[in-house]
Image (cartoon, helix red, strand yellow):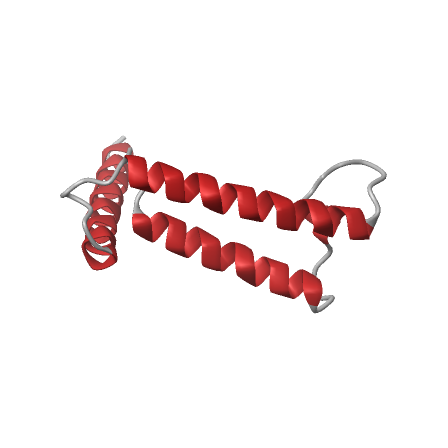
Length: 101
């Protein structure tokens, strides 16, 4: 599957939210950087460095996979809705099959 612009946008926002929660003292960075015996300040520094590198890699991957099919975030989200509905339909069909037994 192609990595898309919307994927980068949403993941980046989620990561920024987690970082803010850590900065505000609502979460501990060590929960996200599971390295034993790591000080909280080190865990937060690692988290921030990981975030920057991850987002850069996501942007690079998105640029590499840029296609006409996924030309803007709205179209990408519409594709997600179609994909989700197909998955739901398959799950419903599978449950119905099992109910017959």
